[in-house]
Image (tube, rainbow, N blue to C red; front, side):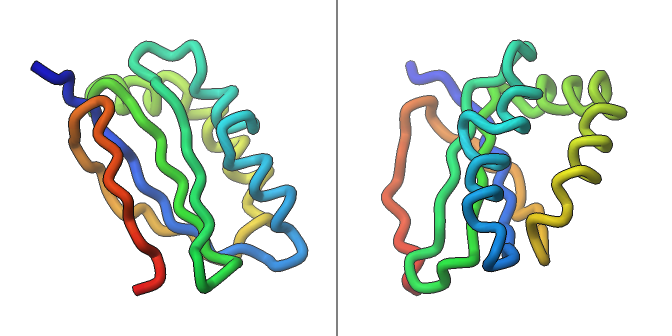
Length: 114
């Protein structure tokens, strides 16, 4: 039986001049992923750029469970808030799209052109 994970989706509209910095900061080797790494239940982060709107991105953080994600948020609240303030200038809008459950290795191809 496949293991279920939780995926946390955030949508961003970024400053055009900050694309490279944003991709680094919110990508799988940036400071957000570094903050998450080593936390119980954290799997990985993925970053997607919209196909037709080059300044729109979706970041997906994969955790073993919502419980572990919530425990991380509580334990690292100050550091999370500090990093959020520090990197806020990279984007114009941030929207938590939601928490989605799925099988561990399930990867649906989604087309952002719609």
